[in-house]
Image 1 (cartoon, rainbow, N blue to C red):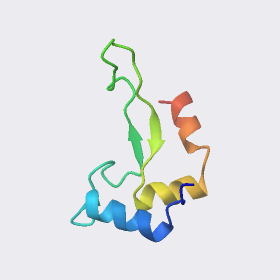
Image 2: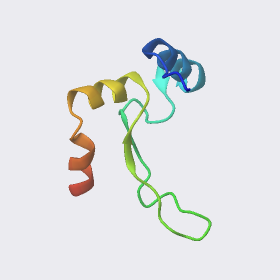
Image 3: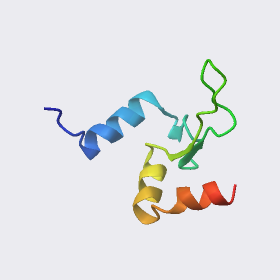
Image 4: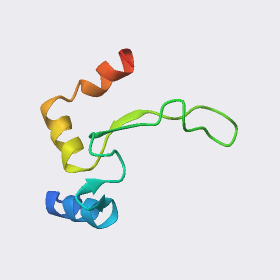
Length: 76
């Protein structure tokens, strides 16, 4: 059985691995990571997507507006 990660563990992971000088290295403090038209498999199949980041901005945005990602996919 896998234990779910706690909010404290998530914050520690983000800060230790991706938080540099209180700035998110994954999303640039925007809260969203967009890899559409940028990430491809070895066979050349496009597999990018738009996702909320694990940083505090991304977590907050996901909680406040979970439909934001779907809106971005429709209106790039």
